[in-house]
Length: 65
Image (cartoon, rainbow, N blue to C red; front, side, top):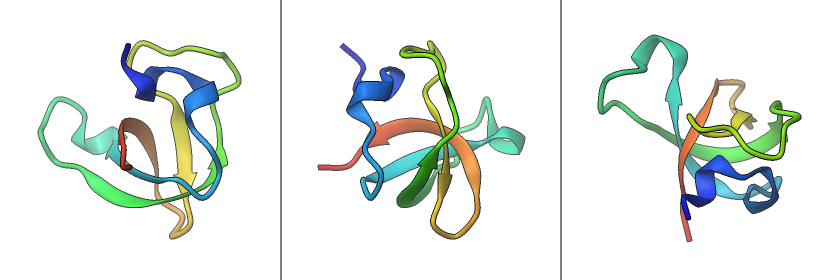
């Protein structure tokens, strides 16, 4: 199971790695804390879309433990 694809695995305050829209298809990632969850669906195959506390928006690629 890829945790980043399921909304229930993302909690506000989690540290995550996201990919920004402009960087999709590359290996460039941004790390930050989740401010709010933007995807309403319970699952998304590219990752759940979130806003980080610094205002950046992207899809979660990894939840940092």
